[in-house]
Each structure stands twice: as structure tokens, then as C-alpha cells.
Amino acid sequence: MKFRSFQNLVFAIAGVLLSIGVVSFVWIFAQSPLGLFQGSRLNAPTAAMFVPKQAPVLASLLVNPDQLETLRQLSAKPGDRAATRAEFEQFKQGVLGSSELNYKRDVQPWLGNEVTAAITTLDIDRDETNGKEAGYLLALATKDTERSREFLQLFWQKRAIAGTELVFDAYQGTKIIYGKIESESVPITVASAVVGRQYVLFANSPKVLRDAINNVQAAELNLENSSQYQAALAALDRGRIGVVFANLPELAKLNGKEPPTASTAAISLSLDRKGLVAETAIVRDGETSKLSDKAVGALNYIPAMASISASGINLNQLWSGLSSESSLTKLVNSPVDTLGQRWNLNLPKDIFSWVTGEYALALIPDSDWVFVAEKTEGAESAIAHLDELAKAQRISTGTIDVGNQSVSVWTKFSSGAATKKIEADVVGVHTTIGKYEIFATSINAMNAILTAQNNTLANSQEFTNAIAGLQKTNTGYLYIDWDAAQPILEKQLPILKIAELAGGSIFEHLKSLTISNYGNRSGIQRGGVFVQLS
Image 1 (tube, helix red, strand yellow):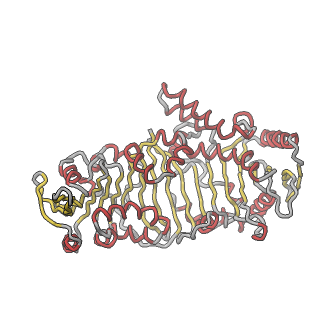
Image 2 (cartoon, rainbow, N blue to C red):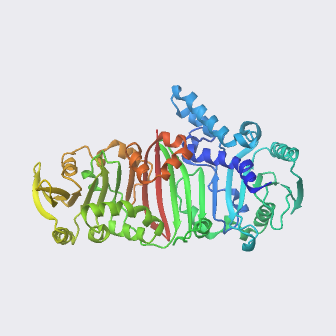
Image 3 (cartoon, helix red, strand yellow):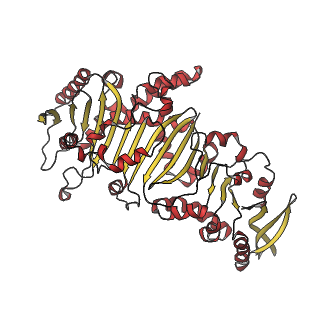
């Protein structure tokens, strides 16, 4: 059986189980449907003992995925329950439909409280002369060993009837079954084993299963005993119902990308009554960030209608950190360059460098940008320098009144040969209010700020809900109002539409996405992501 067949027939199980977990973690329950808001009884995947220390990535659902639909039904309004039930059925059938597997009939009776999938190696036989073939492992906890054995028996009977010659291999007291293929190297074919009375294992090669068994018997080889794995998981404070762990240099090799400066990363998935919280821990060196549990005052000048906003403390430090990561730099450079071009400035050099206090940057309707910065030591001279830069670029500087507020205006004049008229284009405006300097890309945007009064992000209930699932002590927030930002993001990131198709119902229920940085603690960079759902 070819590797593509393996993916279609076996990892379809992983797809349905783990995808349901990612899409619907907010609806999982334990004995009581609401119990898992405190997290799973498992803090870490027990199946990590099958996975080698150098594995590129492991993902684990630490509860029975069957419980997703029940909590979703309890959470849904009575009138929505039929639709949510149909969502689950359509999703499961869509993933398993072409694999001759039926979740309710074939998997549900014996599946336990853990589903773990891993890429165990970049090359199964470690021989580059015959090409590279990554190793894949799926470990399913079983609550009924006999039923799981019956499932495997039926599974292999169907393969045999279809013409696959079966091989039964006894290894270290465990029976491994796989489809025989002619190969000069390591066979790439679906393989399975039942280990003890607790786990059903699938892999894309019998060698992956043999290595998994070896990892259990030689504990020093497995991920469970990796010091970096243990440290990353220990840094995750919240109760969890799912875990993802990545060896970042190995994962970068898998994608053919430049290795990152960080070594490993762990993500825990947990529940909040308003959505899903992902807590992150990245093992890396870094500066100790300035944390605060106080609200960022600069948000008092960001209109509540902002579709995207970033706020926090010490923008200079944040930008320096982003600049050290090539992948992150590519992601944020585009909007920063766009705004810099509108203002004819090098933002990191001319503005970010002196913003060591509070800041808030936001996109508001009509594609206007707003930037608010706390005026700390050296800010006055830096702002005066901005006016000098404008003059050097033949941009006129002047002042006008917007309401009762005096506002500095950068204006670029041009003349039309045909009309013999002089046209003025406002490049940007800025003003001082209290301890903050406020910049905007238009007079209308500045007017929106000055007239917002109590209708700002700082006192917006929507923003309060969007950060409710995150730790209060942090360096700030990146907030996305999904309904308002979706058209903008789809235009800037065409791949997002593909993600929306793959994500299915999660995007239909998505209200907002908020990211926060919890700082560096003992060489581990921590953060959180809150996905607010309707």
C-alpha cells in the first residue's frame, strides 16, 4: 500500500479526532460537561513515551473527542442544536467518508481519553541517497482492548480482501501488522500494533512502530524524558485539554526553511466560557520584558470601531525582538512599510526607536491608521525631528484646529498642468493630549479620535470580552475584530481564504482573535492567544 493510501485510510482517523478537537475544544466536557473548563485530568500526553526526543512535532488531544458534541449541544441554544448536530455529522463524514471507516461504528466503542499524532523523524531510514520519507505515528488510547482488537481485525480483513498481502511481525513481545510491498529500502505502508492493553498504534512504516517500542523500553530516548519538553510544559500554567509540542529546528528542516533562533515550543489548549485559549511557551534566550497588569492608557484614544489594534509597553523592545526573527519580520514588515510610505518615514528608526512607554496602533474604517505614543524622555526632540524630516522632503508643516484641538499637519502640494491648480494632499497629522502624542493618516481620522470620548477601545465591552481569556499581567495585546477585519485580511493574505475553507465552522463562529505576550521567564518566552467564539 502506497504512502498516499496510508494517509487516506489511517490518518483520516487522526484528522477527524484532532481536527474536531481544534475546531471545537470549547465544547468538550469530562464527567460533567462543564468540568473541562478546568482542564483535562491529564497534564501531558502519556503517548509521548513512544515519540523520540528529536521528533519535529507532536499534537495531542487529552480528552475523548466523542464528548465534543455533547457539550456543544448543551451550550447551543435550543433552536441551534439541530444545526450543530448536523455540523458534527457533516464534518466527521467529510473526513472519513472516502476511507471506508465509520467513526461511530469502528472507533467510538473503544476510543479512550487520549489521541496523539506525531511526526517522529524527517527520514525513516536516515539514508538520503534514496530520498527522504518522514515517519508518522498515531497513538490512540483504548478503553476496551478487545473491541480495539476487533476493529484492527476488521480493518486488516478489508485490506486483505482488497488484495493486500499481510505481514505479521512479532517484535519485543508486540505483534505488528502491515501490508507487504516490494521495496529496496524501508517499506512505506500502513502498519498497526496494540501495545499492552492501553494503546492502538498506527504508523506509515513498521520501522516507525519498532522505533516507538524501543523508545518505551529505553526511556532516555523518548520525548517524555526530554528536559526541554518538560521545561516547556511546566511553563504552561493553565489547565489543558490539548497540547502541541514542536522541535523548531527539526520542523524548519521539514519545511525547507531557515532554522529559527528558538529551540522548542509548546502550546496548550484550554477552555474559556467565551472561547478557546492557547497558551504558548517557547524555549529561547531573550530580554526580560516589562510587564504590567494595568490597562494601557493609550487605548483611551483608539476609537472602538478599530478593526485591528496593537497596544502595550515599549514598542522599541518589541520591534527589536521581532526583527531577530526572520519569519515574524516578513509578517509585520508589510503593514509597517505601507504606513511608513504614507508618512514618508522609516517607522522603526524615526518613531519606534523612541517609544519606550505606552503605545497603541490601530486601523480604523476608510483604511486610516492611528498611532498613540506616551511621551517619555527624549520624545519631544524626536517629534520635532519628524517635522524637520517632513520639511526636508518638501512636505509643508502647519497647524489647524480640529474642534478645539490644535493639530500639526503635514501637507504635500502638487500642481496640475492642465488645471493650473495647486492641490494639497494631507500626508499625516499629529497632536499632543496630556502625556500622549497622537498621530493619524488623515484629518478625518484625527477628528474620530477627538470625538470618540467614551466610545474607545479602553471602555469597549467587545474589547473587554476579547481579552477576558488572557493573563492580565503582560506586555500588551494584538486584537482583531474578525467581522471588521476579515475583508482587509483576506485582501492582504490570500491564503486566509484557504484556511477559512479548511477551518469550516470555527470561522463561522469566530468573533475576535487576541494575542498577548507574557514575557520571558527563565529562558522561556510565554504568551497567549484567545479565540472568542459566538
